Image (cartoon, rainbow, N blue to C red; front, top):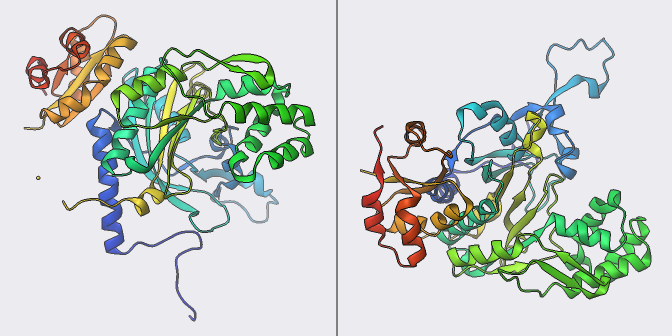
Length: 434
């Protein structure tokens, strides 16, 4: 054998020192998220090809590594498309939704998942893009209120902070519903919205004139529609979100459009994370076709692009179950993060579940998690309780690894006071028997 022996193109080997560093960065992400109530799961690398090609994965569905059925007769004349029955996952979200559908009877109605592992995309390898790479995801399945978006963003920002990336990072936020309303107001047909999203997403990279030209050339919009759309987007790019903001006046289109829960989400996350920077970004699209509501990314000045992102994807789990299941997720670009991070040199755990039933209780509990950790808890996560509290709920909390439960009757007043005694709250938590 001659020539240099190297890893498969687009894939990498890691030497022991590199692997140690990657595991240390991963441990920060894992410890941060699991300490805030997210449960680690694992899913197979392979899924049936029809699941991966369900129309939800956007451009990634064109980059699936396909696996042929075993035991095929080479003389049978089977077409290549007919020979494929499995594929390597291109992200962790679709496998998670299948996992939830498979195990819903064994999981809480609102399930907080942490997942990490390799994913594969058969794209052209280039700097910063690989055919195999690791992702780190957190997801909340089963919570319809915007408290899920608040929790996902606050939790993700906690990880960004612990990695030391917060000073140079900004959260970009938008809503897919607002984008569709904007397209409709500009006169663009509904069946062309997704194509318009892809072009609009290039605005900062290629400029206004190029975006207008592409919209017209690809017959997505007329010239006047394209000009109005771009003018509208540019005119609202500097808008600062406020808690009581429900609509946005768009003079370029002579209309006023709802911004759904973006103002309240930004305000609540800002209260929980005082140092966070949140920017309304009307050009933010996110490439996956499954997003249905708020979408977000974290941009970092040294990265040149986002280091993590996600959004609400209410329709995906329902494809497997035949009923709607709300879901919000956030994915960390581990390969980018591991190159940016610089960590300092590297010592009976108290695991507290903050029970809640209503959205305002969840929001109150979110303000207490970090304080409980500072007061000595190793874990402080939210756990949705049934309408009628029973012994089964406390048994479920114990089965999830919690040994304390803090009820709303104990923490609501403390949260409202603004300066709670976290040590006293820990004393008031109900002790569970494991």
